[in-house]
Amino acid sequence: MDISSTKLLGFGVGAFSAVMPQAILAVTPPDQTAASMIVNQVVRSVGFPVGSAVSRLILAAHTAVGAFAPAESGYSTAAWTAGSQMWPHRSMLPAGIIEQTRWF
Image 1 (cartoon, rainbow, N blue to C red):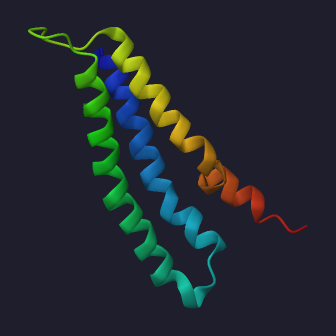
Image 2: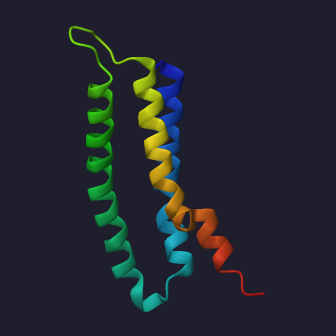
Image 3: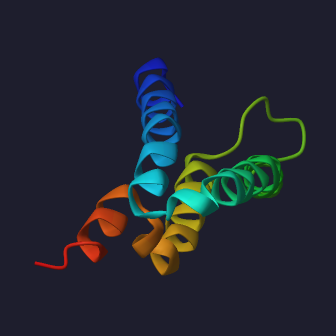
């Protein structure tokens, strides 16, 4: 994985993490904002380590014995696995939340 890919990944995670609380608050009733922020934090606190562990497992499975780095197919498999896990939850993305709240 080259430096530009790492920067792009970091930017994507940072941008998503930054806008998610605002998107959640935009559709949450005022009396439920604390609960919604707690759920957001729990999901992030559980999701990041689980995602990291699964990615490491996939990369380890694509690393030959004695090799320094995984095969290129390991990175592709890890990326496609992560993407496939996001697809069922696309309505939770900020654009999906905003799209679902348009009542007019």
